[in-house]
Amino acid sequence: MKITYDEAKQLSTLKDRGLNFADAGQIFSGTHFTQENDRYDYPEQRFQTYGHINERMVMIAWTPTRDGIWIISMRKCNEREQKAFATRLG
Image (cartoon, rainbow, N blue to C red):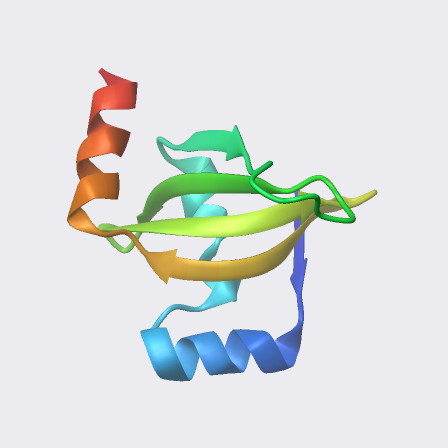
């Protein structure tokens, strides 16, 4: 799967949150949970995937592309999300 993103947003996320979009493949190669994000009428189909990067639970927002995915954002999960993620995996 090809993972693409806006380089300026990736650098901002790395600086502000210590998360690198280039590491997103770790989420998909490990245990993860994906749900569609339909809270708003976005111009494209969006998803949220919860998983781990370097043993830290994170959430990425993304949209499918012809060749893979385009990362919209990435952030660390809060405690509530960490508990919900664990529950969904059983």
